[in-house]
Length: 250
Ligand code: CA
Picture 1: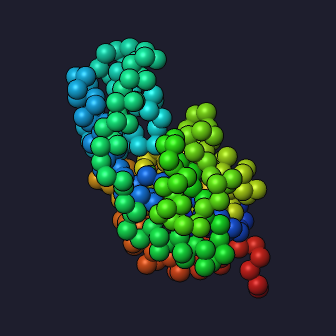
Picture 2: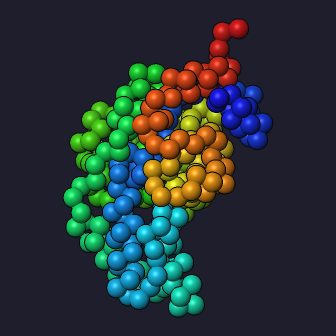
């Protein structure tokens, strides 16, 4: 069932093969079940200022920088850019609101997928728009020994952020990879757009409330309804990807 998707990818991006070496994971909504907290925090902080941003719309903006999201809402409602002071205030209020929640738990299936990635001799990397100071500790606590900090891309590395392909291009550069040597795992429309824009085979896992068409519409090559279902299909998926390798024995 994955053959057609891979053939389509190869044609669209003008590659003859996929030589899989690395799996690039988005963090919020893929590795951690943190999106309900983010969406709720955005909704509450905006509402306190009379700004309308529903929880569901927050999922549509997932992956955008904080200032990007704030500006979109301000433009729509106040017909002007947010001032730098407003951006700083709203974003820090959002962080305070988010931190009222208990630490986000691992997404069900994420640890199991990562173990399979390692067993397949592939390198897992995190590519996130998050800039939380505790990010490295949080990853190491929840996914011990899985990620190499020097390969990771976070908010501190990038200028534009998703949906710009920049974060994924940077991950390729850090890993010494070509686009057809990695796959992306993303849950958000803007993240999918960034992976596709970087020329990487992009797997959507629809862990939030959005219609699957939203993620497929951004160009996702394959969609799973959850990390658990990706985990179940992993062997078949990777086996099919390996069958498109230029190194495969004839
Ligand atoms: Ca995400």
